[in-house]
Image 1: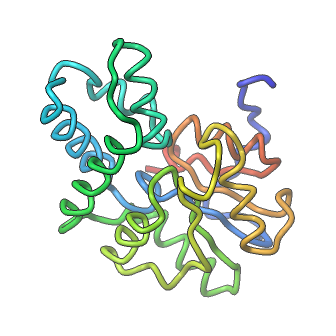
Image 2 (image 1 turned 60 degrees about the vertical axis):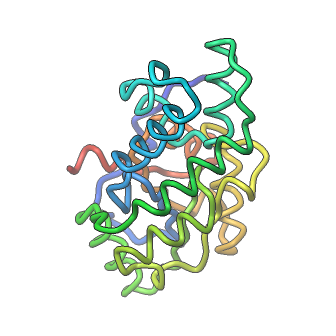
Image 3 (image 1 turned 180 degrees about the vertical axis):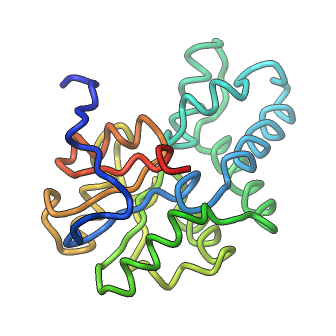
Length: 206
């Protein structure tokens, strides 16, 4: 399948027509947590004795990738033997301790609130752990907007595979083609396209 992103799969925010359901990425889309995630990665890898790998530019290029998959990629690139699951767990647990003071991505949260008020069912589909995503949403007071959360442990293949969004559509009991996704990362936009969903690239509105 081509990785080209067709422009007809990008629609304006706010939406001209209400979707049957809406699915939101969390980190960098609803909550401004990406710098905090990078800090957690940096401290985790530094503690493991690898202070020179995974620079910030690479971190943002891999946005949306699960922590386990990131560890596997780092092992392959650098010839390391980091344990994917335990490294991911250490990083996610550290991230959870750093959530105090995180801020919402205001225009996207405003759109989520608008859609919720209009009766559109909402879900979150993330490459992060479900419990950590839940904490992030609670930190900015919007957890109650969402029917549920699909996290990395709920899928076999993370973004840019479409599975996380297809699972969210099932959770919302809505056909994929009737859903709209809100995303900030290229991998997430590609995943939404592969799921047959329209996608709002929120970076065009920030």
